[in-house]
Image (cartoon, rainbow, N blue to C red; front, side):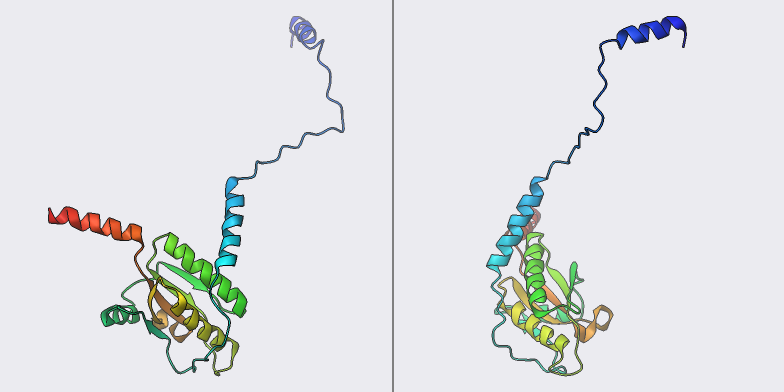
Length: 190
């Protein structure tokens, strides 16, 4: 820097006051509105969870899980049993307590419905004895899935997806999916 430039710089900086040391400004990231809404949504789900932990009829280990809702054709259950509906999402409940499994299953089904998912896989584990913890969770899963209106059918999974320790679940179409399907087929018939 030349002498002339140095003088010019000193003149420009003559009225500048140095910052006081020890004072630091901490800039916080603004909290997203999603955090609050997600928290509210979680609280709402906790309050609305209708799945009961009342009396449980334990399903024997050798009996496969299977359910078909009213009005559902046998072909839907057969296709589900044969793995023709590939799972779009899965939930792992291995080594979870009954209450944790209850909360996780409820959130999972509600989120799957919100995302218009139809085919799910739930891994619950398989016990060797009827009174083992995995078989208790498995029995509760069967009870809880039957309590959902959205669940059309469920059955044990194929060995590649967990076999007796998992089950396939199929959900009803959402109103939005029905409307889209109607639009697609209405255009074709014109």
